[in-house]
Amino acid sequence: MTIFRFVLKRFLRRPANIILVTLVPMAVVFIPVSGWFPLPMGFQYFGMALMFIAARMAAIVMEDRIKGTLLRVGLAPVRHSQYLWQNLGAYALILVGLSGIIVTMGTAVHGSMLAAPGLLFLVFSCFSITSLGFSLAWYSLFRNREGAVATITGVIPLMMMLGGMIWPVQAMPALFRRLAMLLPTYWLAEGLLSTAHGAGLMGLATPLVVMLLYSAAFVLLGSMRRLT
Amino acid sequence: MAHRWRQLDPRTSTTIWQVTGLLLLTLLWLSGPGRVAGVVLLLLLTIMALARWRFSLPAWTVLLDQLFCLGTVPFWPGAVYGLGLPLFEAVRGGRAWLFIPGLLGCIYFQSSLPLVVVLLQAALSGWVIRAWAEEAGVYRDEADRQRRERYELESLREELLTANVQIARMAELAERNRIAQDLHDNVGHELTGAVLALQAFEKLRQESDPLADEMLEHTKERLTSSARQLREAAHGIKPVVPVGIERFEEICRSFTACPLELHVFGATSDLPAYLWSVLEACLREGLTNVVRHSQARQVDVFLDVNPFLVRLCVQNDGEAAGKAKDGVGLRNLRQRARSVGGSISVDDTNGFRLVCVLPLERRDRLGDTREDEA
Image (cartoon, rainbow over all chains, first blue to last red):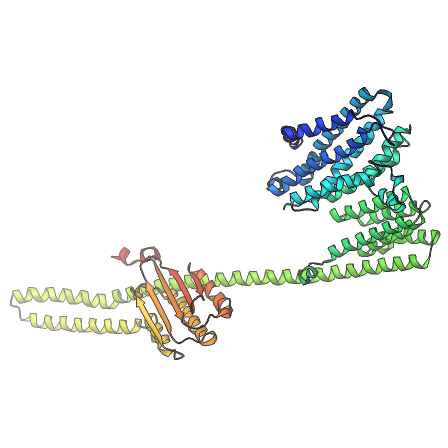
């Protein structure tokens, strides 16, 4: 677990990362309920924050590739899979921990308006892993870090909009409504809405399973060992 | 663009086919009534395709793909077209019989003409890519075999060249040993006898012995015999064919394509025979290139020998000889020069210049036994 500990330390020793994982997400907790979304509005934006944080984390993996760290890891008695899983594990731990903190704080701030905080935590945890996998897969398609970061910064808000996290999917044309179902953000919105409408764990099974399937697909795509 | 087409291999084609298949299935889902079940099926098929792309999955895993498709058909009838993917994989893997459950499912659920066309196309694509992969494998193996044989031949050639140099050195030492033995056994004995006779003559002359004149005659005979034996030995040693610098000069004289000037610096007599063979080959190659590839008006040959190395430079003022730079002749020369620790370089910036540099081994390192014998 040396890599796991190192990844945690490396991420948390940068002040910019601390701000990214604490101040920005925690700020969304205090946004009140408004508009069509039955949950406090901040929880809509927390999904987007999770995706951006995951993108920042996966960018570090890409930096390892560009700076030649992966090449040195290849020469060390460590398998690529160990390196990858310990990286993803450490980042997933941060994101899941952050989801727990946000849901706890949300419960404290909004009280009973936040229905089933445990299920909310489950939905956000699954989406954290999906976001991490998505970012990893996205970066694996690029050789240039700047290009990858620039495009993913534009793609995440688009996914949130198309997925029904900014406005309801019912407001979009029929074709877009169908297309939205192919995005992981749609299933996050679906999970959050189901939770808000009082669906139990069984009601959440479909969004959770689909998000986990997306995670598996993204990680498989992003785990290809590339040294350059 | 042509370069990109050359990079298209069976593996890439398989990926392209699978991605296209999944995209078409997605379009079918977008145009039909299927909802969550379709998304789950698409994700499962994508995961299976990615897993096959990343890892070497066993052939039986196509049964899982078929299970996913057939399980989704009750919720989304279009899922039956997804069976094209496992069929493609089964045929590509050479185990078409693994598609029997899918085939039975097709017959049970829906056997429309479009489905038959899709399945036939999938099977045909899988078969073509499989045959392509097999053919590519055969050619790759053949290329590997030829490359390995070529490396072995080049290695053998280098070993032979090295052995040639060693044999030349051994022959030189053996010949030197034979000459020393010859001089010792014949001329040496005669000269020793002459010296002893001279000493006896000196003593007899001091004593005014009448045998002194006879002894002097005897000494003269011995010295005459020694001179004759020495002359015969020298004739026996000298080769009939000229070697060394004489051979060099002869090659230069026989070159008539254009004026040639030979410049020699240093003591060429110190060069061992095995280096002369390399230098001669370089000279011949340089002059042949002049005749074949350039329109030279003047050729200069420089042979510079110093205590540590010998440098041969054949240069002409003709046009640059592009073909001569990487021909078989030069490659062979490079190998020969390498076998004696030297190098060959060419320069075509101003005319054409062939430079051969060979290191000289010091005589004391070569195993010269003259000092030991002394």
